Length: 67
Image (spheres, rainbow, N blue to C red):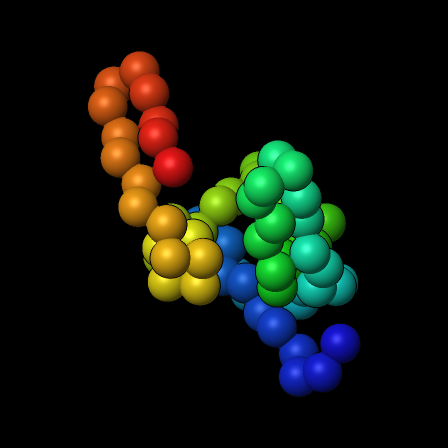
């Protein structure tokens, strides 16, 4: 992995990503450049990455997300 990718944690610390992969969420939705951060307790999805790199429109309601 080059260059090194660091992720900022909620407490202000920074941790090193251990890898970058492509993730298939659905057969029609693949996300490139996903960072693997073992110390991070949650899976996060960048809305900006989806809208910019995949040219998606995303809508939210209190009960629903539409891509």
